[in-house]
Amino acid sequence: MKELSEKRKDHRGRILRTGEGQRANLTYFYRYHMKRSTKWYYVYAHTLDELRRKEEQIQRDLLDGIDFAGGEITVIQLAERYLNLRRGLKENSKRAYAATLNRIRESSLGQRKIRNVKLSDAKTWFVALHDEGLKQNTIGVIQSVLRPAFEMAVDDDMIRKNPFKFKLSDVVPNDAYVRSALTKAQQERYLQFIRDYGHGNYYDDIVILLGTGLRVSELYGLTKADIDFDRRCIHIKKQLCRTADKPYFIAPPKTKSGIRSIPMTDAVYMAFRRVIENRGSPKVEMMVDGYSGFLFLDKDDRPKVAMHLENYMRLMQRKYVKLYGNTLPTVSPHVLRHTFCTNAQQAMLDVKSLQYIMGHSTASVTLDVYTHSDFESAERAFHRISKAL
Image 1 (spheres, helix red, strand yellow):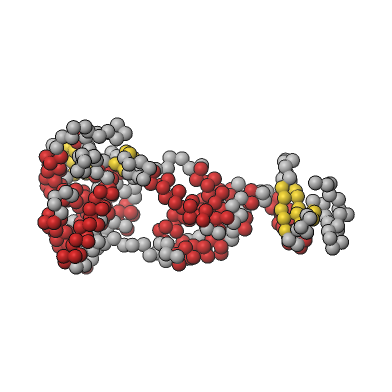
Image 2: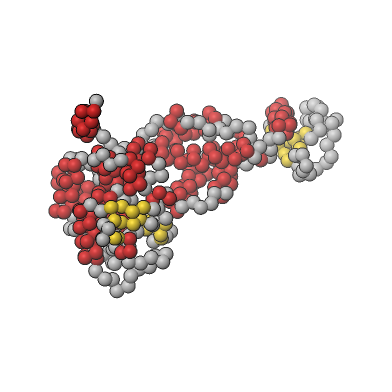
């Protein structure tokens, strides 16, 4: 490229400034370099006025220490850079982030340069995603990647402001599916239905989940060594998980608080006794990441995983609706967990003990997400304390 001079002119005879030039297709360019760098950077524009607006912005950014060239990377490139710096992610988190990156990559905003993304652009995109059918929780995962990624870009002096730093609920309504806890009558009806029509395959699994609040992956991660019949307690130290890429693997509990011991009710105690009695002795005990002797096995003597129970409960739900109509809420393993927590709270178990049993890192999760109340339970609690009022 020829050396530029201040007297160089464009095709209309206008004098070009230092660093400015015009290409054969009549578009304009401006070249510059950062302080303490010999590398040249280029910006382009269709008109000279547009180019000079960009020049002014570049000069302001250079004076303020903003890396204009860094701001030229795209949104997806920034998101990938941010996630590449994350360490210690669990398998489920990696899957969620991979899906999030794909969604960003496929969007028009994902191909935009980060310096050109404004607050209104971010909000408009989230509204469009919601209009396409995405729930607030899913959009929240996207924000949980882009907000810290753009904050990193601010800290690196690539951009001035973080366009994803806003309260999501101000833009997208909270439309998450609310799981309802089963009433006492519904619990009895559901268990009786499973006993009568479920062929005995998963009855004890459901009784244990309903009586302990375990996550289904924690239940299926249990081995013989985790059950203490003398003290009547269950030791939770791990989860048995499965993904499309990894059929079986051991993971630590969801949080550090997930490592815990849970006491057994009589019903749970008897259910575990039946599980061990009916388990049999496989010719070969399957080993997963150094563990064997899993209590819950499928028909092929391989350890059960969450998918087994989830599919079974969906099948039983359809069968129930066919026989009795929609007279029960949709029941899933997580609904059983909700129900246990609600039962324990309504039985006046103190919140710190309940938090421990549920394996929650904070009591607010226990109270705000997993417990439900109604007039009858509030009325009973009120009568218990009425004499002190």
